[in-house]
Length: 138
Image (tube, helix red, strand yellow):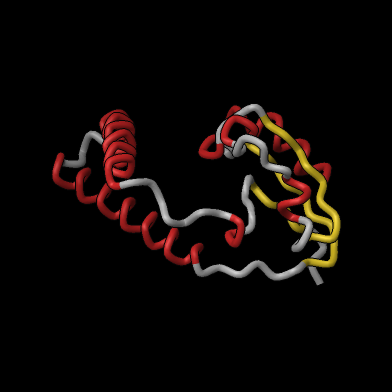
């Protein structure tokens, strides 16, 4: 028996397009992410050599590609209970009907909206608001 089902800005994989961006779009995204990663790595890990940082980023990219492969094959089971969905509104796909998206899989869905992007749903700033709501749900 599941006594609490909390979903952090996630949606059923069956309704998503896993074909991915075009090669040019993907390469641009990788360059952007790598630049951000290198800035953070410079600030937080001075002991790593440039080659080690590049290697770490390569592992991150490979991990992401593996996750996409697994998600593209995912099947969401039905849950005959209530779920709490924590929504990052800045990256919510335009026009998405969250209730309709989850209707085939979740009996009852309670939404909690946060003014942040997907990657920041668990940031310290977001957790200041999300944390007390999560505690209240538990």
